[in-house]
Length: 118
Image (cartoon, rainbow, N blue to C red; front, side, top):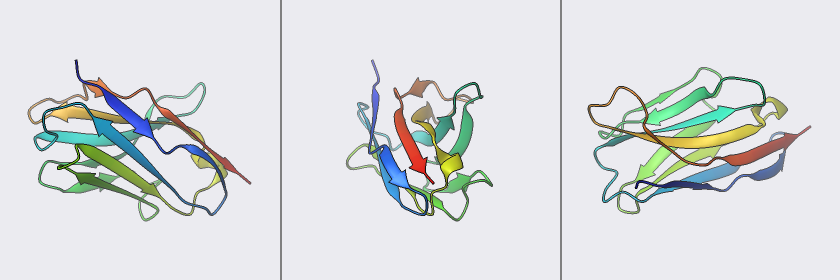
């Protein structure tokens, strides 16, 4: 059973920064695409960023330039560095993983709450 465990969420003022971490109970994350998503109450889960096994990163327009995804394959951990946070970034943040040849993310964390106060 694969587990993804997020940490690092919390309360921050607008303009502040947070770094989320996601530890994976996989033998190795080297062959997995890793992603970050978020969801606000009553809304769909939104894509934020993804990191490919080659290290290439892709971002949603809403967070590009403010959020940075990174991975440490030696620690089986993916990170999301968030800067210049806005109240509209308030959400539950999820990490996810999908295998090299999977089209959909099939492993999900339980989520961590991020609240940005104005």
